[in-house]
Image (tube, rainbow, N blue to C red; front, side):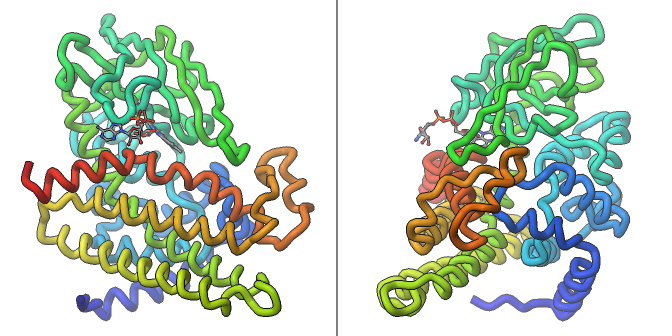
Length: 398
Ligand SMILES: Cc1cc2nc3c(=O)[nH]c(=O)nc-3n(C[C@H](O)[C@H](O)[C@H](O)COP(=O)(O)OP(=O)(O)OC[C@H]3O[C@@H](n4cnc5c(N)ncnc54)[C@H](O)[C@@H]3O)c2cc1C
């Protein structure tokens, strides 16, 4: 397969690289590359730097204050940002709720949130999943009852990522409990509103980015209803498509494979370097082939999107990208040998400074922690089994 790369896109890559070299602070890059969860302070500061250059809304059209870039330019930008160690932008704001607000929100809502997202002044938690509603999201039971010009919300959300440092939650709630899909609405709620309780979930790597959120008679104004009442399911579906379309995580896969090559060049297998051991080298080569295939799949999806496609591209990318990430992680851990078995506390937590004093190579703590967290990559954003069903239904035209 051959893609004609526009010379203007190559010039764009150079411009982006030069900008990043000058503007990503070295300490920020070090923290981002560490493999531990990013810090909200870094994300906030970085979004502001990008916004000053007019580059924070990479997937937003010009009329919303975005860049108006083609999907290919967004791909190039993300690739360069990863390589430069720039913190991630807030996917929930820029790629999920932002586009929905711009598409169906009121003018007042657009004005309140559009510029605030662009400037890193407002961050979001995604309140969809519940203890008994994950893959079968439509069976959610959080209720929102209208009372005058407010909704009163009661319910329990789970796995809400990074909500502890967010400002708002966008959530799905039943406004009509009798109807299934058509009884669901999309609402915005202030994270610190009275009645909201956040309980941390500490993950397998002893890190905190996940939470349970309890809503106990929480009041949110009716102006925070996104679009129309009862249409939340339709909005949520396009929001989840947006989430998945970017989930191949090609830049992360590329970076992690480079890390693996680096580790295998430094670690030893008997008398020689691990990277020279025939069995290991052959498996590494297979991962390189898989990465190349993922790059082409992603580019193909971007090109086809220009012309419109009915294929379940988001699901395809999600399955391929998440499984490759896990395979690379497994080989990284194998390459680390005994150091992969050590417990490394989150160095961004107060007691985490100890992580820097542990024995072994400097890259070991982040690799081990990231490996643990990425066990979830085949689950979050919609479990891979569900994606496979979507793909099968599409190709078999069921
Ligand atoms: C790290 C992490 C971050 C997350 N962040 C967020 C967040 O910010 N906001 C949010 O709302 N949610 C978030 N989630 C939740 C995530 O979207 C759900 O975990 C996911 O949709 C699966 O739902 P579940 O956990 O209820 O599992 P279940 O739906 O109970 O599934 C359990 C298993 O059964 C399989 N299964 C279920 N139904 C079928 C079927 N029909 N066919 C075949 N197999 C099936 C699944 O594939 C899975 O393997 C996060 C999850 C994780 C792990």
